[in-house]
Image 1 (cartoon, rainbow, N blue to C red):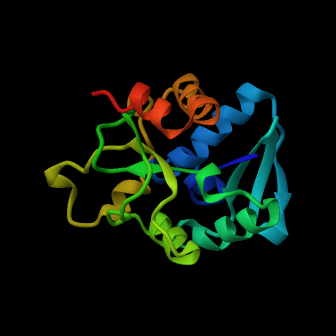
Image 2: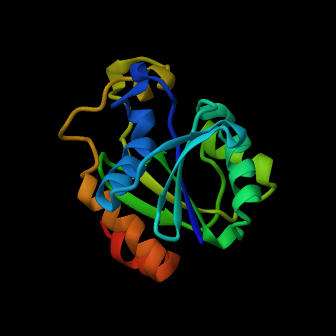
Image 3: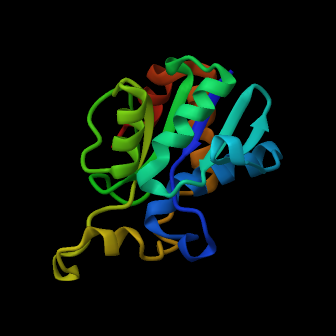
Amino acid sequence: MKLIIGLGNPGTEYDRTRHNVGFMAVDAFAEHAEAAWKADAKRKASVAKAGKTILAKPTTYMNNSGDAAAALISFYKVAPEDVLVVHDEMDLAPGRFKFTGEGGPAGHNGVEDIQTKLGTDKIARLRIGIGRPPADHGPRTTDYVLETLSPQDAPKPLDTASAMRDWIEGGLEKASNRWNRK
């Protein structure tokens, strides 16, 4: 069994924001797989089953994503190597993907909370580029990530579903070889 956790913030006011590309990605996968979302209050997430893959969207807000991740991993008894966290990444150009198998959170509070709650940084991640704010944007990156993502900068749903499918079927190395190219 595989577990894919898309990071974002619950609530319609956060729909289509840069910080919610993780939610957008798992939504695209669920739609492609015709999987229905169901609330799971005990695990603090919405979940959808697509074959032998569990998709999840934490309902804890971004900075507390580790609570949901830990509860989901424990409940579904998923090995760490079978977990993929999908999130926004300011250090990548908009729409670009990069898989990683370990490493620090690079300032991403949701990833940091997951790593802290799980006690490891060895969790596969699909980082989806949102770019950095323009120089005239001001100093607060929190404002930037909570702004609506333009259609031209949004990840393509078919690409996100394909990238996750590559990870499910071939593992981190295969997915990295295909999607980490510039």
